[in-house]
Amino acid sequence: MVIRADIDLGAIRHNARTLARLAAPAALLGVVKADAYGHGAEQVANVLVEEGVQQLAVATVGEAVQLREAGVTVPILVFAAPLAESLAAYARLELGVTVSSPEVAEAVVEAARVHGPLACHVKVDTGMHRLGFSPEAVPEALRYLAEAPGVSVDALWTHLATADGDLDYAREQLRAFSALVDRLGPLAPLTVHVANGPALIRLTHEVARPSTLIRAGGVLYGLSSSGDLAPEADAAGLKPAMRLSTRVVHLQTVEAGESVSYGRAWVAPEARRIATLAAGYADGVPRALSSSGHVGIGGRLYPIAGRVCMDMLMVDLGPPQASAPGTERPHGSGAIRVGDEAVLFGPGGPDILRQADAAGTISYDLTCGLAPRVARTWRDGAPGGP
Ligand SMILES: *Cc1c(COP(=O)(O)O)cnc(C)c1O
Image 1 (cartoon, rainbow, N blue to C red):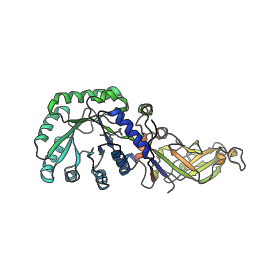
Image 2 (tube, helix red, strand yellow):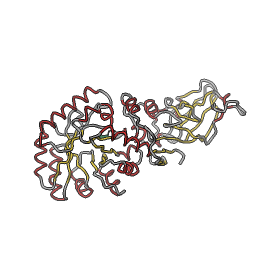
Image 3 (cartoon, protein in one colour):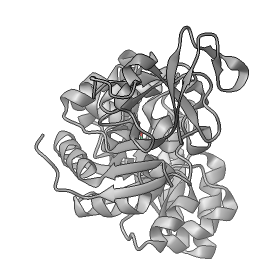
Image 4 (tube, rainbow, N blue to C red):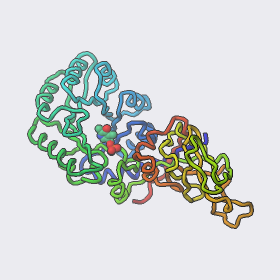
């Protein structure tokens, strides 16, 4: 395989330590859903546990099965709202259940009777309007679950809609959650969690009061979900952990007026040197980067020319004179050869945030979207300084 993602586990260790310091005295829960945002759930889980992270979370039961089969023994919370038929697997694998409605609560009580003990994280909806009890319904749900044999209420939690954007709305949600915890008094579980990674970075002190646990996802991988978050994540010293690269597989010169790729969407304004790279949307390189993204070759950035194809994309290296044989410009496009490395994001190429912007999406989408055919390698160097 030519296209490859290189994953720096040392950067993830560094990020985990940085975030743990920021979160203290709250503990970190490492979010490793979607194959650890494309970074390899098993590899990342092992590194996080070594760094002292004592709980993990995934999105689906299938992802939790994969971690248990890999020998991961720490508590794992599943974020999804469970269907009744999957609760046997939660009991067998000792997974934390997201209890987000009266129907799920009833199914949990029944499943605990049949399949064995179940640990619940009761979810309250404070404004995301995705999953969760209304705050008013929480006391009754907690009592109902606490009385059921084999059922433990391990945590109460909520999720913020705008921690990477409008902080006023995030603060409203935080206030609603804190007020609920206060009202519950001794009925509140010992563990309460509200913050995702962006909230930890941007509302560090405000999330501290109602939190004993912080659900850190993208920040562990040095990713930012918005332009608001990015400079603050940088300032906190978080390091991107993935670099995506491929190779130049073909070089040609097109004349003025000739077009490149499907649909003839890019037409050469003058004679241009064009490099073809082995990377396309079937690898997870967004088709939305057509004529808008950049690629790093030999330490310089070049624009993508025309549509990104399924398995290849083309890059505009500029006027061909720079590439004439015997050129005096060793760092110009003339120095580019078939076989050279081309960086889609990471060191030597565009920053992942910039590439995601060009594709009209967020950096999470680029790492989560990598296809299975992209070869991944893991390097576990010692974490560098902050
Ligand atoms: C994905 C997810 C997180 C982690 O979010 P980040 O923005 O990646 O830190 C936290 N909580 C829930 C419920 C999630 O689905």
